[in-house]
Length: 317
Image 1 (cartoon, one colour):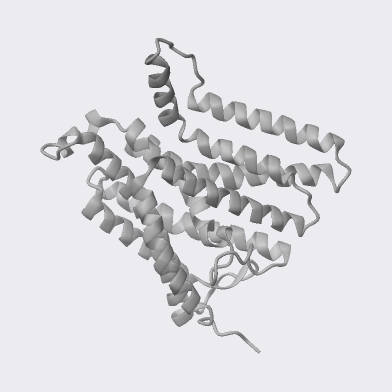
Image 2 (cartoon, helix red, strand yellow; image 1 turned 90 degrees about the horizontal axis):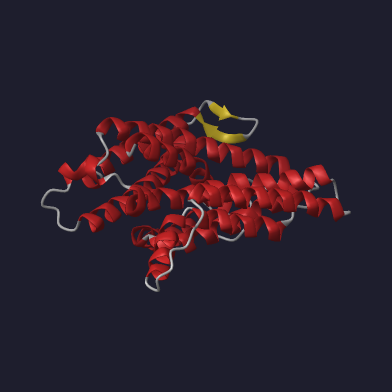
């Protein structure tokens, strides 16, 4: 007996009504609140990814991977922590020498890779090549990519080129508060654009989908739904630019919307490929009506690093 596509809709709506305001609140708060939120999501999604690899016979070093993932997440908060530690030591007359953010990330990755290789040297479970590949790919693909979401949020209080946008801040009051507000709104606009993309693709695809998008990976997705999702993402981000993101030009807003609308759906297809290979429907059953954390945030994982690079190197450059 086939299951109605709307069978899980009530549970999805209830979860969304609770989760959406909480997620938007923590995004706007930023700082350690947002780090904690992303770190929890990243760790849960990584655990689920390791579960998918286990279904294919891998034995990833889960504790080591999650620990390294948390350090990589934290590395995107490095400038904030660096400044606060520097001020603390300076208050007692000490000037500490500390890593840069990039140096810290490189140290974490290199030490992690060495520990994975040494760990597999002494293990007897499964294939060392498969185990190491699963452990490392999860940290780089899930944790590092999730961390760039923190990176986007932290670009504003600790990396925003004030001189480039000072003309937009005239008579706006506290510049620091305004910039931090733009940071929260930027992340919120990305997340909301992805939600609109997913929703438009799902419902438009159900109603009008005739041509399969990538049947081998996800039989239910259609080109009609994909186009609707893409347009929904572009229009949503452009609307956000007009309403709350004056530092972003209309051209940049359109480009970011296109990146979100395309990369977000590619991220969903990538996870679908992983699940189909593992022979499971969802990465877990943690979120009622939505599956697992990786199921719910697979688009975010793929979009975050692309948006981070575009905002940092193009818009704020």
